[in-house]
Length: 325
Image 1 (cartoon, rainbow, N blue to C red):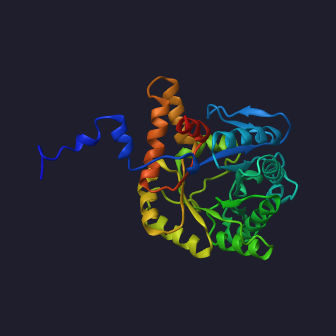
Image 2: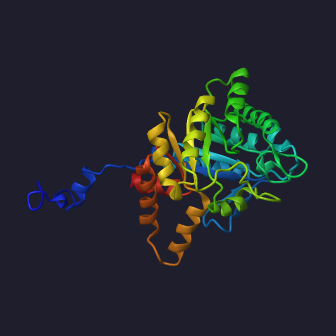
Image 3: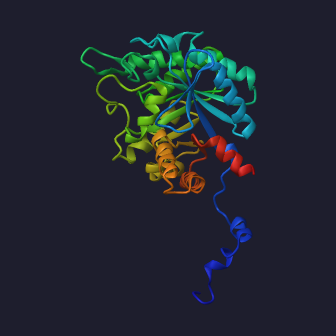
């Protein structure tokens, strides 16, 4: 049958109809909000390239965590930018270091809020790379994953509800899973940045996390933006090694990858709407070129429609309030 018997507009003509037949429904339960922690007390330092986002001391991060929980967002993703940096990422290994202290403080203040701890070396190293650097500048994969496993264990001991390795070293999920299990943290999930691309959309984040590489780039370990089949391979390998959730990063330019991953795996799929995506929307909205709320909801709906079960986004508290209004 065809027109005039078939009229697809019949169920689009009013808002109640559109709501009833809507295929993709955003929910606050699907959102995770990133927090950036820095040393000090009473620190709330605006990130110039990310309007509305600030670097926070632990006490201020606790305040924001409470607000996030009150808005209905179930989880935060924690990044730490310690003052002391060295080649071995000693600050991340310190059981009383900045990240560990922030995890413990937030969990104490907001027991029901899930704290995901980003596991990487870039924020705690003086060279800014995600693994140990060999003479000549190459990244030593195998020694790096042992350190990453110790960092993840440190965060689990501090109270993290999940550890999220973002380094893209080969074998790091297996090393982390083994370390956690040996130390009594068999029930701590691993959220793997499984398909993390070497993207041009990370620039504002590197200001917020103070994690820009001091030399070179990260293309020898992050994925080539031209590759899709490789993403499925990476995700499958991480699941074999023990990942409980897998992530695609960035989200917007990689909707096809989210769809491929969703159709391949049976674990939850997370997508990260990264800093560059956030800042582009903010910049256009500030100039009056787009409607910020409409654009945010449209992009997040597109990410979920592509197959993401969960979305990390800097818009999370605002979106949760919009959806609950």
